[in-house]
Image (cartoon, rainbow, N blue to C red; front, side):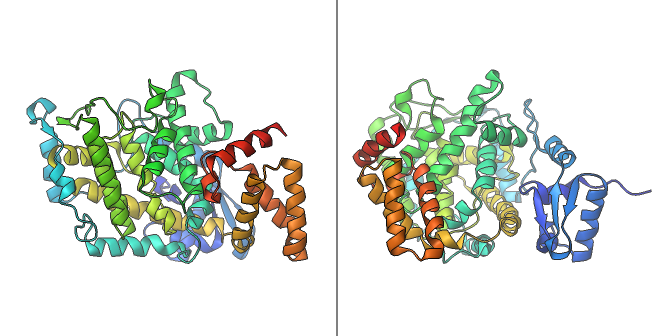
Amino acid sequence: MDRPIPKKWLEPFRFSTELGALDYEAAFTPRLPRRTALNRLNRLRDAGWIDRHGEARATVYHLTDAGRAKLETDQAPQPTGGESQAVARLSTAAEELRKKLRRPPSERPAVGYQRSFLDSYQPNESHYLPEPVRRKLFEIGSQTGMEAEPAGTYARHICQRLLIDLSWNSSRLEGNTYSLLETEQLFQAGRAGDAQLSNEAVMILNHKAAIEFLLESTTEAGFNRRTVLNLHALLTADLLRDPSAEGALRTDPVGIGKSSYLPPAIPALIETLFDTILAKAREIRDPFEQAFFAMVHLPYLQPFIDGNKRVSRLAANLPLFQRNLAPLSFVDVSEADYTDGMLAIYELNEIRILQEVFIQAYERSAQRYTVIRGAVGDPDPFRVKYRQAIAEQVAEIIRARCDRREAVARLRQWAEESVIETDRKRFVAAAEETLAGIHEGNFARYRIRPSEFESWKVLWTET
């Protein structure tokens, strides 16, 4: 009698619904010999959880509806507060910190913002992540093989999977009860089917918009006020009682649920500290140190009335996007581990728990996207070849306030004069697709002034 198939064998299909012939061994953790990996895949196929198409090197395994249902059963968050994610393997020191946080909030002394925690950090001299850790993270994160490509190439390359993964996991860490499958369905429909869950649906869709903003503005975005404020506005759109608070530093006091920490309440001080955090973040050269610094200090300050942790999690991905490293999508991070990591920072200025959670989370994320990298193939060489030309033509069309017909005519004329004959139709199509995707969150990428964008967009929408 055959033994039951372990559910963990479906893990390679959790973040990519298909697996190519060249990815067998690397798909499983730990890495398996090819024959063992094939045996597992065959047993999954016999169980009806996956299908096989093609032969030899062209073979591709696809997740079936039954397989998706099995994964969905395992990963759906539990609304009663139960954990569905793996608990981080914490060191003894981190566990001791966790014990201190297990006392009721009333028994933990009230603490305020400690400015020395920020002031003592000197970019590129202080380090929250030890050098061996940073080196290890870079080694696993750079397996994308795209270090020489333009900033953001890799993140855009896995865009569709990343949008779902990061939106779902970041929302889940906020207590959102949407499942991964429901998130995928929401993205396809563009709206929620259940009015009762409208706020949760809006939170997830806001994440999608915010991630797209970062992907589309990778070369211009950074740890500056414009980027971070707009990131907050996108993440909190239609979720705050006062719409004017979207993308604005708070002017009212806030508290932290289940914590004895009291963030600063003076608006002028909040603004000063916010600018200091951004200035220090910009100076940090290592992308992982920069990411973790943002995850520590933005929530600790609580510069916004709400959405601070969401902003920090997406901002942490910016240096990874810019260097074409595997993104951090918080795969398998439990809400309890993340919450404890933040509480330790709020009340004790101790980074150890969050540090260990961050390291393990990145290792898992990088591993997942290494598998996805093999599934989605190489970046489109045509777009890489004409990237600059497309951007220049798009910018000229917007500045000239061309409608759709005029835009196509200009593109065809330019292609006739400047693009080799075999590439002309494809160049025009790629430029048209780029124009169709321009909106208020990405026009700066093309060095367009707001007034130029607004004038063009009105005309473009009417035609």
